[in-house]
Length: 113
Image: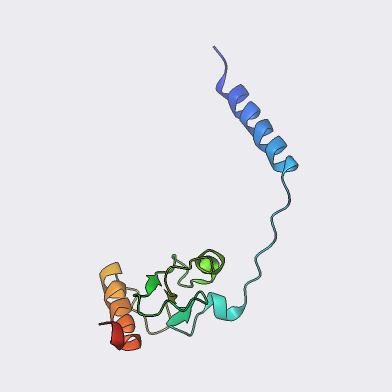
């Protein structure tokens, strides 16, 4: 029977060798407006989708959609907008935050309702 520490040591060695063989990951540069968003809605791609309905992206726990920018810029089928957690967003519960985002979408995009 192989000891658990031997398995963990072997796993660590595999991870170390794999990491050493990969290209270095470029650092992500954040600016203050990425960490403390002031815009509730931001455009995330440069698509003119015409009459098609837009796509809305909800931010991760940080409240900013900046981290999703590169991925969302690749979407060509629809205009993509990111909803961000600004100072006026309620943080008491997920349902309250969802309700706030719905109001932001309705206020910002009345012609789609």
